[in-house]
Amino acid sequence: MLYAEERKRKTMEYIQENLRASVPELSQFLNVSESTIRRDLKELEEEKLLRRTHGGAISLQNVNFEPSFNEKEDKFQKEKRAIARKAMEFIEEEDTILLDSGTTTFQLVKELYVFSRLTVVTNSLVFAQELQDVPGIEVVIVGGNVRKETCALVGPIAESALSMMRVDKAFIATNGFEVEGGLTTPNLLEAATKRKMIEMSKQVILLADHSKAEKTTFAKFAEIDKIDKCIMDAHTPKSFVRKLEEAGIDVYLVNA
Image (cartoon, rainbow, N blue to C red; front, side, top):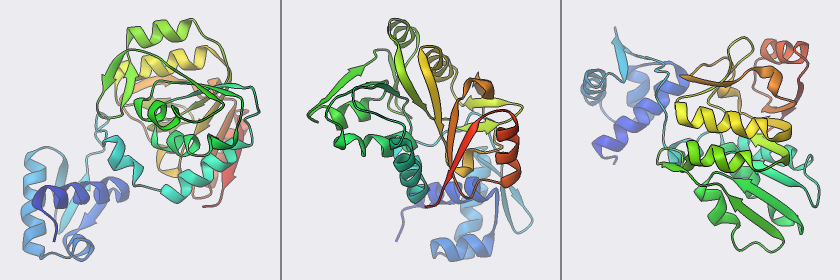
């Protein structure tokens, strides 16, 4: 049986992913009574996290909303692993690569053990810990302010450190990805750090599952023409892929 807070968190995740949900749908999903769901939705609406409708609720699509690293890691794991395996094809021995903090890039971290001569620059505390004892991989971690939501180091110190570096390839994560609106993230400091990462990279490779397509969050960090390659899963809308290709981006779709 789920505790109330965990139940409400799962309710929010479901509605964020599906944009809307009915009371019977949520009742079946969480295996609780419809009266419990109605009470939860009322409380979540009072916290301004969703809007109730007749018979259910819809997402507010709050541009500032960002789940924690652990919450995001649980979503679309198969797709993220497939994206990471494809990304491995673009890494060579003796490369210096940059790994932006994110749950899709974290799947790439888990694949790097096969390399014997690799330098990894990252702003992720999680990634640095994961790679610290791997033979043949030198880890360079940038300093900065810790964002608890993403376990990422961001801000002026991170940007200053990044300014002193140049990398062969940057693997960038995003919260939102639109052809016209560009790449976005909910936090201004994180956006500025991502912007600096892109500046100091010879090649920029975006790793994004289909849920990021045609979505916008608060802070823009790049136009899409800053991206050289984009790896997404096969559930990405074909119309969106076509627009990216028309914009000159090499798009790779993978099956989970």
